[in-house]
Image (cartoon, rainbow, N blue to C red; front, top):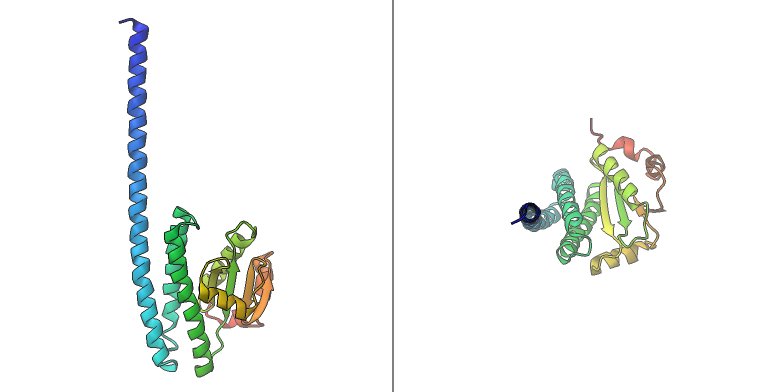
Length: 221
């Protein structure tokens, strides 16, 4: 065997080993990612049932449970963060992601309705934001709007922010959009009943809140 042939075979062997190692590594990482996503999906399903049960309990004793409903804000936020991670990993068109988004949107709508019931029964004045975005490539400012709302929610934890994919195939969401008369102009906001479209800066968004609304909420220190 010539020296050239031997070196060629050695190089080929090294290449095969490297390709095999990379393939094994990719397979391992993909399997690990899928396991993590599966775990998140299972936890979302459990949290969905738990939140739905909490909603039912709150409906039976509105005023007595008005303060305890604040814990739902944190639960919904955590659930939304896990869903966002799953959507980033699998894509917004993934069937599992769509199903989870439908479940989450139903929880948000129910929480919004209960918040309105508590406000009427207990004479409270919650600050609510319905935020409608689109993943169809027709909303260049939706990411920035989402970040701004996340900042406001963290800074003023009593603000109720509900985020909805405008194009999600969900009857309850379509009904909410219809009765709220939300146009397909994104990003779209309904802040305490007032419609607002488009996003420029955080400061401009803050100006859309009722006077004193942000200063009267509990601010994180």
